[in-house]
Image 1: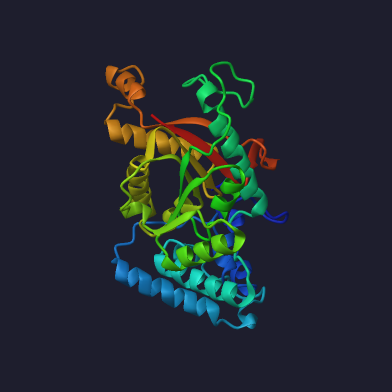
Image 2: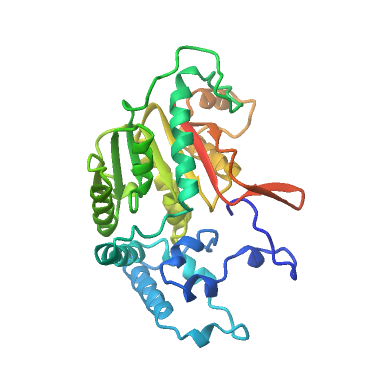
Length: 340
């Protein structure tokens, strides 16, 4: 889960209490299913083939669309939140969602959903720029603080020379925010052609025609270049909501490691994983890549420490937090990793 959720006042804390109700997700606007159900995790391991999964997702989406409002009265059984969440792991869901948003843009000029909210997106862009400017000064690999007054060489004066890739870019608005921060070599990819059409339309309208957008699946990328900065805002979350999420997340790390240049940064924003969970996932990937023993005192582990692929360097510390059960949590996590 992404941080800790506040439980209802009249119930005990439980996994169910922290899940977002499917009633709330669907009743206002079908597209809000995607925005509000990131925090729901499914049980994975389905043996159905992809064609059947897509058919099932389309059927579930159709059923959600045409339910009567009376079906959502409080005295009725709740819809299966797990079934709703799993739709977000399918390309068919996003193709349908972005087709709807593209039509809405053409008819009304609306940009569509801003995943995690505009404030988070602007925070990510500003923080990422500052992090890129600090990188030459940081005392890696032992960086632990979050200050701008770090010893070392001269700071970079701007970030216009950084080449940037945003995977699962959706409507491309994060790239627009990065452009406002001074990044100029910007590329966005998404496996949904509708998302890319929408992103291009919005960029052209808003004066960011220099941003490049390509149809590409991060799990089976056809890109043949590496980038100094790779951003991911919600893409790993969506991948994890597929019925084969654990396997696809492993594929994600294999693929993303080939897209980040040596010495470059990977910045992931998630509301379905905490900072510590993302760090643990990266450590598991590093161990899998090196085949190192998990015993901390072995020579293999010492070699693996030197040969790791990604290393945690920082995270955003300014998101609103709250305390529950003696632990402090946040509903969003943005974590940066250095590609070794």
